[in-house]
Amino acid sequence: MQELEAPVDGIEDNSTPAPEGAQGEETRDLQDEPDTQDETSTQDETDTQDGTDTQDETNMQDELPRQDPLPIATELPQDESLRQDSLSILTETPQEAEMQSMSPSSDAPAQEFASTVEDADRADSPVEDPEITLKNLRETFQNIIDDKLANIPLRLIDTHSGILHTNNDLEGIFKESEEYQRLYENILSTSVSKLRRKVNEFFRYAMLSHKWASAKDEPQYWQIKGNIYEMDAPREICKLQQFCTTSKREGYRWAWSDTCCIDKTNNAELQESIISMFSWYKDSAITIVYLADVSDISQLKDSQWFKRGWTLQELLAPQFIKLYKQDWQPLIDSNKNHKVELLTVLHDITRIDIDVLKVFQPGVDNVKKRLSWVGTRTTKKVEDIAYCLMGKRRHN
Image (cartoon, rainbow, N blue to C red):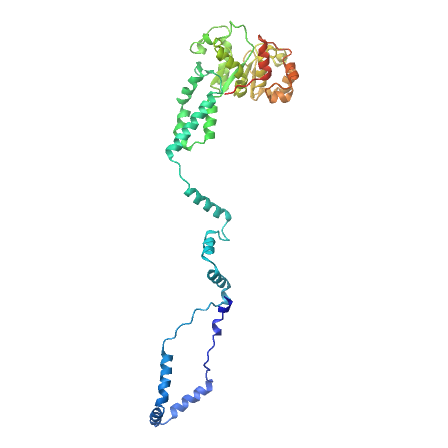
């Protein structure tokens, strides 16, 4: 390409211009010539007619329109960038030109180009049918509800109405709630994490931990008829009523007590409840510990609550605990987790490592140490000690 380059001003002109002074003299001579010049010219034309024919042909050729020469790529010093662009256009192949048009300019951010490519890919991808999307989201919502119901106690008391409900009843109660209707109607604009969070919030429940009185004094499942707040027997019904009232005041709609929330005449249900109890306590929103023999924190170490086998896992499994005295007032003036607030006190009473009190892992390791935890505890059945130590979890 360099051979084609030549400055525009450098094209040669074979004609030599006459000096300025000579041109002036020639003009004056022509003006001074006599009229006989015409006759002389006629004679000259006759004498040279043959010669002028050839000259006329030459002149006719000169008078023909000039054919423009082939374009010559020229270099303009004042526009170096234009020259470079012109050269690139002349030299690049069609494939290179196409690649150049697709690549981002040096001035554009790389993110813009990546975003453009991503948008193009998204436009090419198939769009899911809105009906299918809606169906999938509703199935996901139902799966979240089913999973939650499969991992909470088999029966719960509604602290608002005082009615004892089965696990199957709870789904219908939830679906009749304003919260469910709002989520269901706006499911396309609701994230799965929000659906799960709202389901968990609705089914938060409180667990009761206590030392049983005599079996005949505790309210049993078969004795619960209608609203528990309206019952006046058996003797310990007031404890159940106070537990539900306290749970409601703490902000929990659902409550569970081992006295009336298990049908002990149903062996399958009883066994299921025993092996699931650790998980239920662990997954509870709060465990309310009722200390019937404590009226002051100084009496805590002597409470019978630390002498029973089952209350061991009720201390270890829950993540959030509040202790209440015999008058149903908090043992300490704090709305925080009493398990954390009284960590050192609980360690001194139980001799259980602080790290274990913070986070207990069920299992059969460190058997000797675990046996030491129940050295002063008792249960009616020997095998119940094993459940207390292992913290057996429910598997679905």
